[in-house]
Length: 220
Ligand SMILES: [Ca+2]
Ligand SMILES: [Ca+2]
Ligand SMILES: [Ca+2]
Image (cartoon, rainbow, N blue to C red; front, top):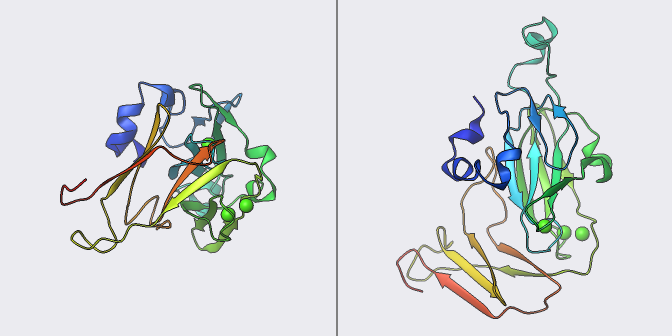
């Protein structure tokens, strides 16, 4: 069974927009929103991240089979491959996604046994970049060159009464009638740690109307 189905957040979304994404998650075949066919992928790491700073969470998926290469070679699993391609779908903000992996550069054309994804703006140019962990293979670092004019906001939480890293702190920003919520986490994806600074895409807005901080001790 695919690990993502064990996550209560994913379960709550299956009946909604993302139901399309998880039509079949038996470990061998999946369908990416905006794409036209089934893929023999494992979806080991499913990550929600705003890669184009438009304020809508996109989906980045790391793929690589659990069955080892020898089992697949001997015919135990004849449908999938051990190494697989990773995938990215952009959120169009209207309840649909478009699958953009084939237009996203050479980093998406490499078959590896990927496990997890970590996200940080490592070059501090305002967009989130992607670090990919691969089983018994070198890491992958994908620099985000999407280069649009969207604005962004990055918030670093430092606790004084709550824990120093602010883990569990929830931030809500509001622009007009639209709000976004992020929570400081100490781990994400499979055995990965993303930047603990919270990153918000603001789209065309250069400012926000309100920032609300809900600390773990209850203070707001
Ligand atoms: Ca986005
Ligand atoms: Ca960047
Ligand atoms: Ca960039």
